Length: 486
Ligand SMILES: Cc1cc2nc3c(=O)[nH]c(=O)nc-3n(C[C@H](O)[C@H](O)[C@H](O)COP(=O)(O)OP(=O)(O)OC[C@H]3O[C@@H](n4cnc5c(N)ncnc54)[C@H](O)[C@@H]3O)c2cc1C
Ligand code: SF4
Image (tube, rainbow, N blue to C red):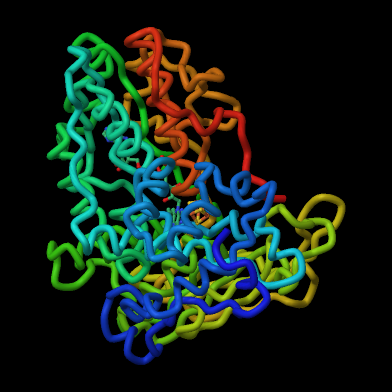
């Protein structure tokens, strides 16, 4: 156990965020670099080393949280990273971006502030990189088997790293010009600087994983060719079909899907453009959708110099306290102030968009909305509440409806889709086609990075068994496992 009295003597302290007026002038991560170092051992010492650590169940990866809390408290950073890497290939991604369902399940959180698990996690991995403790793990012998992975998001990277280390020759195909999936082109730089992906890719290359970027499987190479050339194929192509808003005026210039807007801002940070072709500069911006993708649009618009930013949400404002019907250890739906919301803008709840209006050149100028009430299983407009707000750039962040079937890959491989538009799989991540597996959002639907990594690890175990009859690789989850979220 870390500090037997830590939870009694030490209060919760989080990583410090930079002042808003300073961080809005750049795109760097919002946290004060190394603000955790002086406090983190005491924070880790708040862990009670519970007999039944519910945080293990809260974390889809089954991270060994009390073990590395104890090691961090004792200043044993070598031991801590060894235990952390035992279950998580990329703690620098989850330590920065995970909504931390583990913390919702922390036993201390029943009547006090939960342990700051995510902050301890990111400190362990950042220290490991700083100390040169993250080195390539080259397999001792090669199996002679080959695997193609389609997609280089967290699921594709996890499955590729596990299978490479197991001795297989793995090639990752990515249609984008850079590796990383939504980590690279969805999530903004201020949430995670892309240097964290780059150094992980260097490690993977040194271990033997091969990356082929700018190759759209289904167009540049067919699914059939992959099956002929490789012993197994893993589809980790994400779920990027975005939900649309078919209201009058949708066709106006300036109304974009969030995933048309965010990647361009990320490309500016990569040095591809000086200014984004879709910029919020000087514009009244409306973001439709109150989730994390919407928050990313809010933070991006502020940094681009928007005149105003308004975020709309059809659901009512969640309560700040854990609601009674979402008890511990579930992950409750509560009102959250993300770093992007701290930076300004207005959030309007319980409203629906009725139409967009534009000028003579076809540019959007206004968004018309109406307040709604949830009655008899549907949202009903409240009469007399219609109004217009200025909108010169609108981003749609209303979720995703399944895997991108337009790219030909699904048809060419002959894999079946499930009822939700994702690629169907059995209890071992296998599709209906022999030797073709699926993991991450492509099979689960749009989810979280931690689930993508857990799926990648588990699918790797299934593929290793398929190729060699048995496997030493861990399989933390089954495809049917669901988060403890109400
Ligand atoms: C804007 C945004 C912000 C988010 N923020 C968070 C967050 O803060 N925390 C969190 O936990 N989750 C977040 N998520 C969700 C998270 O990013 C995803 O759940 C996760 O990235 C899924 O990983 P994946 O590997 O399955 O798919 P993806 O990351 O979507 O990667 C799939 C990759 O496959 C490639 N691909 C697709 N088809 C082909 C093809 N035919 N040929 C070659 N390549 C192909 C794509 O280009 C892409 O690079 C966010 C999502 C979005 C959209
Ligand atoms: S990956 Fe997420 S759920 Fe797991 S320990 Fe880290 S923050 Fe918690």
